[in-house]
Image 1: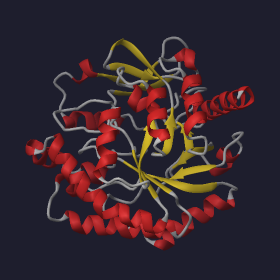
Image 2: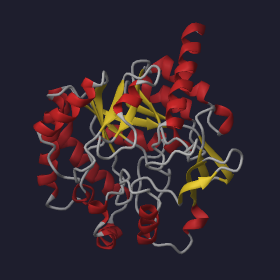
Image 3: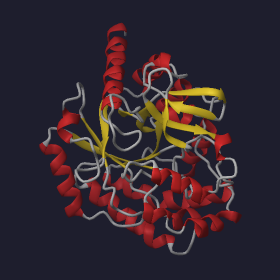
Image 4: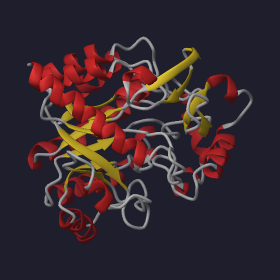
Length: 358
């Protein structure tokens, strides 16, 4: 297992590389150039500068999260070929600097979604990301975008970049005739173009699940359970076509058996990376909050999750995900230092125990 930490860069993150390096057992980061709009080429010079900075801190950068997929690709518009070619160039450029996994998603328009970015947890006074479908009520997608921006503490949030959402209402209207089957057709077109480049360069694409794990605002979503991921992997059968198995995103859907899914895709050697976090459901299948990583604070059995990882994909890249805001820390919601560092130590502790029990 390679323990990593998501880092947005000097100008975009309240957490420093020095702090990440001081977390016990931390081997590297899952990196990104968060100023790059979907569809833009990541050029070699900016990749080199970023990765050299990470290496200078004594950390690896073998995973990029994310290279966003342009909306025209998901919609299947004629302009998609330009953006796909840019993606192919970016894969080649990243591979030159040692990147082995690219995490991405194929969620239409809206990325991960929460109805509150700082809901107080009454048990301890911390706050965390929170979702309640009832709170969506009569809210429109634009209402959600405005609320998310207001609660972001001045940081851009992954999947909620202003450039990406500038023409939201128009883009939403383009999906009126796109169902799951058509979205899968467009997904296959994308994979058929990029996976051969991945095979050529030794890079694996890892598809992140829908979050939360069901359709939102009538938009089609296709990556939130085992059957959905089986369909995605079958679109282009290759070891380079993998999943980013996020326990929290998949755990939002209470029907998912996370350890079983890890074993299923791990035995296929199709787990490119993992995000490991815990969530707590609050009286409804579609109401939950992000909890501490500790099993007893949420509904996921983190011991069984780590045991499954140890059994079938012990060399995969993992990172603690979506921590609470604790100890009066402020920063990008879900991406503070303290609770994610605690999560990493907890996961490493479980790993050590499992190793010694094996």
